[in-house]
Amino acid sequence: MTAEILCIGTELLLGHVVDTNSAYIGRKLAGIGINLYHKTTVGDNKSRAAAELREALKRTDLVIVTGGLGPTEDDITREVVSEVFGVPLVRSDEALSHASSLLKRWGHQEQTSLIPLAKVPEGAGLIPNPRGTACGIIMDKMGKRVICLPGVPGEMQAMMELTVIPYLAGLAGKGEVIASKALRICGPGEAEIEDRIRHLLHGKSNPTIAPLVSLGEVMLRITAKASSTGEADAMIDQTEAELRKHLGYDIYGTEDDEIQHAVVRLLEERHMRCAVAESVTGGLISHKLTEVPGCSGVLGLAVTSYSNDAKIRILGVPDDKVQKHGAVSREIALAMARGVLSLSSADVAISTTGVAGPATDDHMHGVGLVYVALAWKNGITCGRFQFFGTRSEIKERAAKRALDMLRRHLLNHH
Image (tube, rainbow, N blue to C red):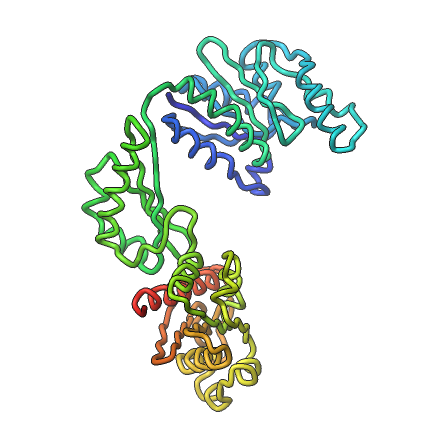
């Protein structure tokens, strides 16, 4: 079975809202063996939305529509489905009762706004909405199915889990299962990774390996098709083992892992504590670490020493070194790491200093130049990096690279 997604909402086209619904729906459909070949986004215009739905139904027998189910004038989905299938909109007492009871439960008495929510295309079935007033719609006619869901992610996801996925799984029967797994990499860029695993990327159609680039890291998504979940998982495991053989420590985690999760896990396993001294990253490293539950057991001290005065007074960076080398230098990064290590009595410390832009610093260092230093009881090291992008992108890349340096140190010193 194949499917398409039609997203309705001008706010999506204008970029005021990011479409996370399609990614969620795509993952859920793949899990029950339904292929997703097209996704279309259209604004709150009835004629254009109807035209897109007609085109989608020419290509596939199942279209999932998100958005446009609310009570306002720009909520056009019901009318679009009614027009495309050539049926009138009729009153649904069930839909009205659901919306009314939910509003009363929330303490709202005004009911006139519910009238649009009670209109459904004739012959349509309802999808219960446990989190909102607008029921979903299933239209099944002449071998074509359209499933309409709210655009609010929490409502849409609950309805998918409780009703839509079981319904579609029953239609799909015992067809192919599609499973996937993501491996996350920090350090080498996409070109280097592709060069190292080129023989695995090409000439294989099942499982497939797709490189995906995000800010400061690369993801490899392995996707397998099989007759059962167990068979698909076994295929993925074999491919993952081959990738790990070629990429080794460059792989820091899987799926929703982020680099800070890997760092906190390693610190916990080794019963170690770290400290952080940040300049260019402005507290972003400590923010990432403290997003991980249990971080309080492994993060000893975090200092944001953005000004030279803070570096000198708090971290003990020698004033003459700042004057001689400038704040953005290997010498200052090393001094910052030593200083925070001494202050915290941690096992390992990391520091950052650099130029986030948009202008160069007083010593005319280029935008994106960053030094990351790492200090521990018996040693110290410093890396020099040149990052590109906006101010926030440079900070993000620097923070991830700093955490990756710490991760690799922990892997090699245990």
